[in-house]
Length: 465
Image 1 (tube, one colour):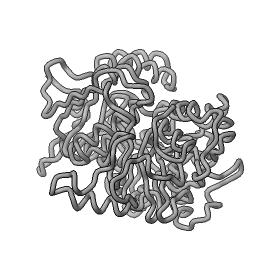
Image 2 (spheres, rainbow, N blue to C red):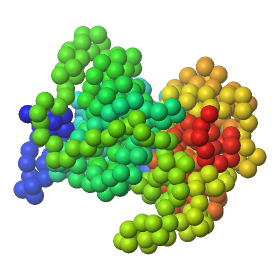
Image 3 (cartoon, rainbow, N blue to C red):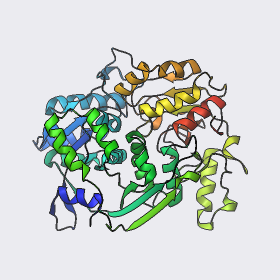
Image 4 (spheres, helix red, strand yellow):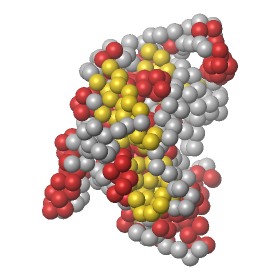
């Protein structure tokens, strides 16, 4: 009896090394501009070429400005470091013959958004990228994980990765969610429950009636944030929802696709397989979740009081005190007492068409609150942007006072022009709320697109309506 993770591991296992680690064969390698320059430089110095060229797909996302226009190119990026990284990706992809959706491409976008939507992420694959949120692709039944720059070079050169096997954790989400509760709320609740180290050393398989009922986009949000629970891998067994999604996106010929579907249909955990840890969560009682501190585990119900050093265990008092000071939280208060400055809807967690539809439904016919100095919507890819504009979502956002942007990682992290100023408070649909993550001394509150849209309209956190 084997788990899904065990099966994928065994099918891609090449050899056991003397160190106790293993060599794992990698089916798909995604590249972006931040973690690839040194890897390509290493190949050049060693006179090496990519082992399997067609396994590699690249796109710039972290450093690209999200106000570009039709004729923008990488040479026009104002920040010198950002420009160098994007230009070098262009040069390296051209030199080595790697397929890239560059800054001028209508299909450019966040690497974890474009991979699945362009049909490059397929069930049963091993997938790596020099980015911690590669776990996103596990939503389609992949063994997907982030790697470091030296490993990017190793995968390019050998199509293999040196890695140790993880333990297995099963997380079952059972029940039907309350109104305005989305997959982002559920995964934030889960992280708050087990902590940011709770999944360390594990591959987490998500299952249960809730998982079976939701879309691939929602599954991606959950697997995306498995890394925030400490897990290197998050994955979900393929089902009919998965296969229908792949059929729609795939560029495979009919015969190949049919053969693949036979395999995917049986790609699941065996009944009675052993997990090292199992957690069952009744999601029907979960309310919309919002982080208050400087770690994704510092999360509460939207209407709960923010923890104080007085009401937490002794060993956590210092962390609570430091987080409250950084976030500018005074005395006993609720999230609804905090006044926000900016709103960001985007990132590899929540920038897909489903996310934008949910947010647009909240803001339609309303206006951004006066205290919100900037509310931006950043589609995850050119294809998401095009679909949203076909549906008129861009006009809904713009009429409400939002700024409609071009694709990119944007305000998820302070590596492009979209950044918070010191002490600005932001409602963000991204995945991390670390100190300075969105800009020096910026204050980030993680939440769902529904909650971010509501906060934009009302200026503070409250019950969506």
